[in-house]
Amino acid sequence: MALPLVLLVVALCGMALFLKHDLKAYRRFKELTDTHARQRQFRVWIVTAFVLFVGYTLLSLTLLGRLGTLAGMPAEFAPASAALGGAAFSGNIGGLLTGMAIGGAIAVVASIVIGRRKAKRPPKTLGDFEALLPRNRAELVYAALLSINAGLTEELLFRLTLPLLFVLVVGNVWLAFALATIVFGLAHLYQGAVGVIATAVIGLVLALVYLGTGNLWVAVLIHAAIDLVGLVLRPLLGGMITDTAPQA
Image (cartoon, rainbow, N blue to C red; front, top):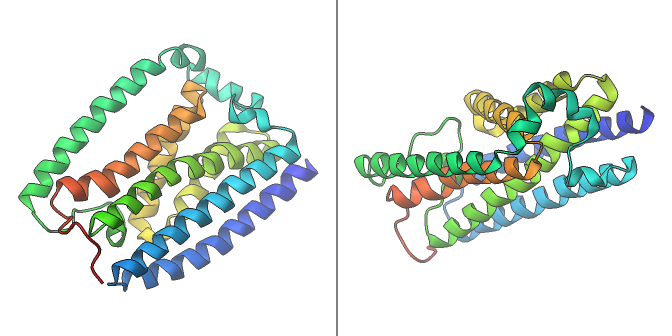
């Protein structure tokens, strides 16, 4: 248990430092009006999250001899997966993805309706992340990259690495995922209390998807799709992108 405990403490301490820096960075970002400065910060967030989250995942799994969990669910998660009908559910991934596509289409239509009714006004969000919404085509690209990056990096850390470390330390898979979900919510503290709660709920759903399907990459895909709808499709189809070139 010594190694998992050390890795867990390092992860939590690192997350606390990351969150402290992220809060300051987001406060500064909200004051930016120059699109080039905004794009630089988007790049910083994308690279930082990828290096830290993916890097720590690979380091932890390597030290634990668990790199295979990138392709298959850890044995420690099996009781929760079985309780959710994992074996039966995993055989219906096609149906899940079809349902996700239908849900995404509905979200797009809703985005168009809401956006057209309130043209050129920021859409309402569950949490304080309006500043992240792109203002031009160049920022739209970064918003898409940020969404895809979040889907990958956050699922690796919060749905695989942290729950695995927690379960190796506390010995209970349900408690492990509950704790990891709380940390996931707190990692979005920059969005305020409402954002933390909304993010934690989404994290819980993604955890259930992962455990239910036994496939982390389904959760990655869904996570990225959710962010793409919020940060790309809603502002794009809602008339929030007002130019085709970055303005200083």
